[in-house]
Length: 476
Image (cartoon, rainbow, N blue to C red; front, side, top):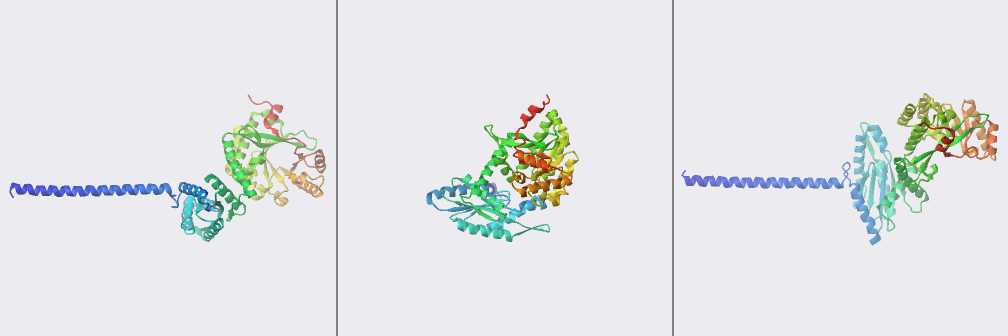
C-alpha cells in the first residue's frame, strides 16, 4: 500500500472514530437528559404525593380546597369535604409496632381510592387522617359517598403476623358553599364534626351544621387548646387553695390546691373554662404535672407552712392515674424536694377509679410506700360505689357535693350522705363533705359524724401565695 492509500485508510478510520464518538456522546447526553427528567419527575411526584400511601399530600389538598372555596363564590356551585380519622389505628400501632401501622395505612389508602369518585381528591392529611374533596357534590350525595367509604372500611380486615384487626373511621362532613369563609374555617368545622362523630360512639358520620350548638361548644373547646399550649409554654398558671375544716374539736389544718390560668392580660381564668378542653384533648396530664411540680417546689420553700398543715390535697386526672411515667415523676418530686409524703394527699375521682380499678390500686399502693395519702373524690356519683371500695386503700372519702348541697331539704340526699359516712367510718376511712354552703348544712354534717367540711361556708378559694404570706416565711 502506497503512502496516499495509507493516508486515505487512516482518514476513513478517523472519520469512523469521530462518528462513533459523536454517537456515544449523543447517547450519553440523551441518557443524562433521561436521568435528569426522571429525577425531576420523581421530585415533582414526591412534592405532591404522600410517600407512604401514594395519595396526594396535604399541600396539594390545601391548594385544591382553596380553589374550590374560591370557585363557589363565582359559580355558586356546592362541593363537600369529608375529614376521616381512623378509630383503632393506635391499637394496631401499640400491639404490632409502627411497621404494621404503616402497612395498614398503605392498604387503607388503596381501599379508599377504590371507593371515591374519579374526580374527587383523596389525600392523606397526616398520621391516620384522610381528607376527601368532593367536587360538584351536594351534602346529601357526599353523605352517600361517605357511607360507602364507611362500609368499605368496615368490610376490610387487616392481618399482621397472624393477628387480625378490624378498624373503623369517624368522619366529619362539611358542605363547601359561598358561606365557607376560608380553608382554616373549613378544616376547623370538619375537625369539630369528626370529634362529634367520636363523641357519639365512633365509627360514624357527623354532618356539620352551623346552628349545631353542641358543635359550637366543641369549637370553643378547640380554641382553648391553643390557649392552653401557649399558657403551658409561658408558665401562665397559678395555684389557689381552699381550706378543708375539721368538724369536731380539732385544730388540724388542711387545704386543697386548685389550678387557675392567667390570660395574656393577667386576668385569672377559672378552671371550668379550660379544664373540659384539657380533658377532651389530652392536655390534662400536662396540667397535673404542672400542679404537682409547683406544689412540691412551693411546699419545700415554705417549711413553716408545711409544718403547720396536716396535709395538702392535689387532684389527679384519670389520665395521670394510668400513667406509670407520671407515677415515677411524683416519686422523683418527693426525692428532689425532700417533702414528707405524709403531707400530700392525692385526690382521684370515683369515676376514674372505677374505670381503671387495677391500675388505680397499683398507683395508690406504690405511692403509699412514700407516705402519700389518697382521697376518693365525688364519692357516690358512680352509684356502684360500695362494692369496689374495699379494694381501694384510700384514706378519705369525699362525699359528692350533689348530695350535700340539698341535704337540708331533701331526705334522700340526707340519707345518702349518712350512709356514705357510715360505710367510710366502718372501713376506717375519714369523710369529707364538699359544697358546704351554709351553717345549717355544716351543723347537719357534724350531727351525722362527717369528719371534715369543704365549701364556701368554710373558706372561699384564694391564691396560695396569700395563705403562705399569712402563715409562714419562705426560705431565703
